Amino acid sequence: MEKVTVTRIYHIGIPVNDIQRAEKFYVDVLGMKVKGRGSGERESNRPFFELLGYWPENLRLATAKGDVEVVLFERPKPIERDWKEDSFCHTAFSTSKEDFDLALEKMKEWGVRLHLGPIGYGGGRTLYFFDSEGNYLQLGDRG
Image (tube, rainbow, N blue to C red):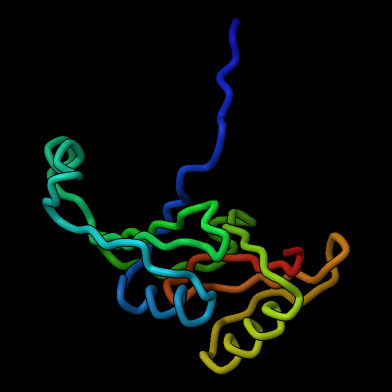
């Protein structure tokens, strides 16, 4: 049987309760750049809208290198999460050693809920925390 070869990650979709609050977190704390916005019945989402009956507010973000896009999708109904609900299911991001320290400072300023770390891991440091919407994230300083 032939195998399929995945060539890259197109995007990572992260559910959020409040798209504006999440935008501030991902842009101001994690330094991502806004690439675009979408919502409702936008023509490019027409097939999804026709199949699902709705299309959520969303925000497309880019990492500094632009190699992976992060898309925030607003949940239809807000929920509260705790890391144990999803065990260690998380989204991991990397940054430089200098920006890791800056991110840690910004997280403390913003009152970000830290879970674990920073700890030494894989020749660098890593930190587990929650975004503004309760999603479990990891930040490592391996560039």
